[in-house]
Image 1: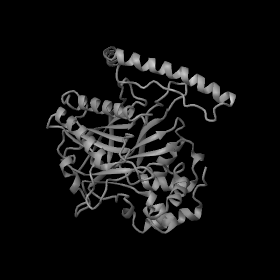
Image 2 (image 1 turned 135 degrees about the vertical axis):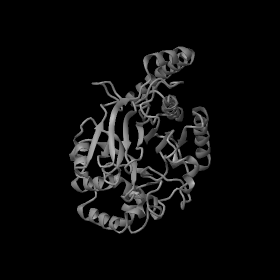
Image 3 (image 1 turned 45 degrees about the vertical axis):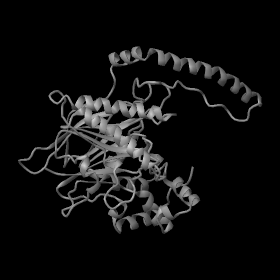
Length: 399
């Protein structure tokens, strides 16, 4: 694994960031607004996995958010607690139990959590995983019984071929070890990691109604096929749509989805159109009174392309999605013209591009001007210790 940034390198990074944090997309703390964000912090677990300078950098960045949904929290909560403490006494956290694997068994398990500024954000009564209950699972399996049996039959056939290839590998007749086959589910049955739903409210000026919403933190399945990813994304969208239309029964009628959706987004011209058509169908099905908005599918004012959220600057895996009845949340028709405004209160959205920050501070030029090899070498220095995802954010004007 590549060596972490040294103290001298971190000093250069801090110096460059101090020249103008907004140049790299770090949102300003502006009176009269609140900032929602999400950040997949790679394997956030033991404190010893990161040096003190890395922790300080993460805390400095995360301190800019009033409510931050964090993914890839490990079973060991020491790192999350350490980060929250470094951010300051006004910050608090709530975290799920481990999800993604049965206790004692191997799997893609992690926790999902929120760090929030108590001066701006208040956690209210609800905290729950999002799951499909047994009756829903049974009905799905029953309705798609034939397709599921075929999927297992194909896997059995693949297992026989796998056993022969593995034997060839062990005997030396085959150089590479074969990939183990898997059951390609034809329908969605359950989440690989249960999304985490918590109720929050953000108060504004005296005499105004606060923003009230259910925050959903999700780290959806990366999968071996695109169909796997789309199934999970469709499932969480269906769940939210069903709940938000139950206006008189849902705890709050507004839902904010934040997290790593693992959506493919490497071809904006085709992917954005396909995904937006998909979202439009949810808008239509939910009714005109529900605003469904994914700002990061739109090119921000003043930019030529959509924001990228992975360290390699090739994908927009991470998203913030609004499913709201409250008309004060930004409408999708306004995305292309969102900006801070004269008072800096927004609404607005963006990404903290620490890849460019590191490149300018240490290489003297933006990442887009580095050679392919130099860029890859730089990413290796931080993708495991800072993260391979960048934080994204949405600014809301306070009521």
